[in-house]
Image (cartoon, rainbow, N blue to C red; front, side, top):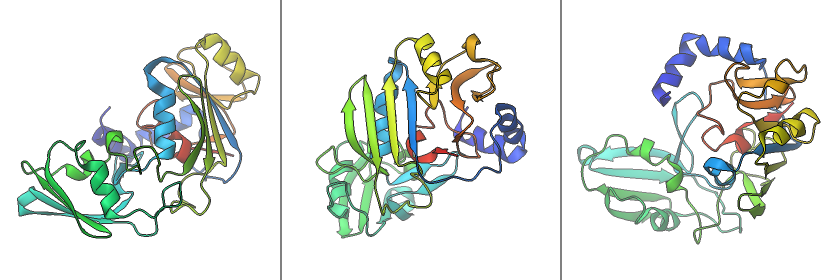
Length: 269
């Protein structure tokens, strides 16, 4: 389902029915605190996607309802009929090492990876200009892609969670950054822990016995009808199973791990 399709789905009211079918209330409000534990399979780089989404921000983001939002950028405008773009940056953003973010950092991150750019420069400490090879009206959407995450020295992010431990294909542990610029809007749980458990049966047992809160378990018959669990998107088409204490955005998300943003968007009730 495309982002535009998801947005239309939500506005039509069908999304409300889908959420109701999973047992997730549309009236649920995010709560601060707790440790969110997630069991993932080894395939499809799920752990890496989750860790990346927790630790790194981009200039823009696609919200769960498909809408484009500013993240590290607070504004953008096209010039030269879409051949150039001016982007204004959010002030008082710091990397996880305490260094303040500025336009020079963003220019360094985008130069090279943004192949459609002819030239990128900082016009002042909190603004940059991107000159494109050809006019692109969709550049703000392009910049929401994970490959355009803004990182200092390539591995220090500005995301809601500071990485405390990352063992590839095994474990991720992230700690919420205090006084983050998204405070009160995202980054609800204090700690996010994800474990890779290759065997789906073992993931199901870990969820059923309360060792994790969320598990990726497609079509696991042993969990259907379990009173303490809900299923996404439904029990008939299961991608994730979760305890009823887990809350998530009211809108329909963008895939198994909510476009890699599960850590910052989901919460514990």
